[in-house]
Structures are given as C-alpha cells and as structure tokens.
Image (cartoon, rainbow, N blue to C red):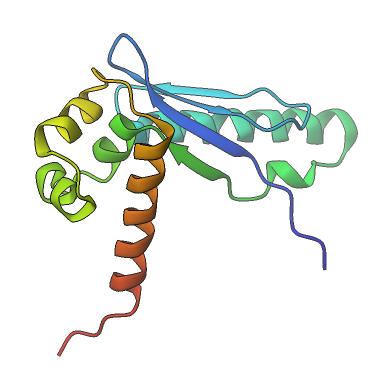
Length: 138
C-alpha cells in the first residue's frame, strides 16, 4: 500500500520572536502559519490547510489527499524547547553531552548550531523517546 502524502512542516523562531510554520515539501502548495507560540503557529498552519481544502472542495468537488493527512513537523531548537517546555534545557543538555550554557544559547537562537550538533540532539531526542515509550510504571 502506498504511503499517504503529507506536508512536511518546518517550525522556526522568527527574528521578531514569533514562530512560523511552513511546508518545505515540493507538492504544489505553499502554506504558512504564524503565532506568538509554536502551538499558535501550528494551529494557524492547520487553518491554512483547512481553508485551502474548503476552497478546493468548493471549486472541484474533491480534496487532495495531502490536505487531509497529518503533517510531519520539524523544529528548530528554539521551537522545540518552546513547544516541549516540559523538557528542562540544562538537564537535556547533560543527557546529550552538550554544555548547558551552549544549549541555552541554541534555545535562544543566538548561536549557530552545526549539522553535527543538530544530529547529536536529534539522536538524543529519539533515544529519550524510545526509553519513555518502553518503560513501565510500577
């Protein structure tokens, strides 16, 4: 069975401190959401998808599959820690093996994050997610 098409959405902290969510895939649609928080930007992006789907339905009587599928979100470091605020930045930095102060600078968006560091952080997030998914509470 073919995999259902979906938007790939980048969520980033903008220069004015707000957040922007926009699709980065090549599918013929260009959609954007903005907000003061990541949740607001994601909701605005979802509203954009809904509006396009409604317009498509009205115009053609059908809606493209991609407009009904759940998007895949990709976060920059600032957006990640804003959205998942329950993650303590300093504790997570120690878990990853990155200096606490440097991780806080990444969170603020004040410092360039190399591809190597991004991969290290992403791998740690996946490791933590797997550990949490496999634990049991007694």
